[in-house]
Image (cartoon, rainbow, N blue to C red; front, side, top):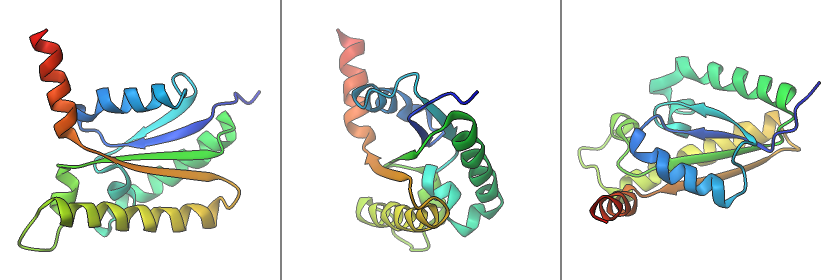
Length: 143
C-alpha cells in the first residue's frame, strides 16, 4: 500500500533553521505529509563536487520516497550563513551576495537534474534568512 504524502523536503542539518522550516511547512499545510531528507548544505550538499559522495544517497532516498510515499514534489529549503556554502566558496571574500549566487546556482543545477529524472514532478526552492529567525527566538525568550 502506498501512502499519499505531498512532498519530500530537502533541508539543511543546521539546528538554527528548524523552527523556520517548521513554520514554512505549516504554512504550506505539509505537516505530517512529507518525507524529510536533511543534509549539510541542503541543495549544496547534493549538487556541489566537494560533497559528491553524498549525491547518490539523496537520489536513492528521493526515488524510494516517491515510490513508497507517492510524492510528486520536492521542496528545497536552503539558508543564509550556511557552513557548506562557506566551504564551497572559491573566492577570498564571502558575503551575502556571493552566498546567494552559490545557492541560486545550486538550485539551478538541482532543478535541471531533478526535472530530467522526474519530468512530471514539481520542485520548489527557497533561501531563508537566519537573522529574522534569531530575532524571533530572542523576542520569544524575552516575553
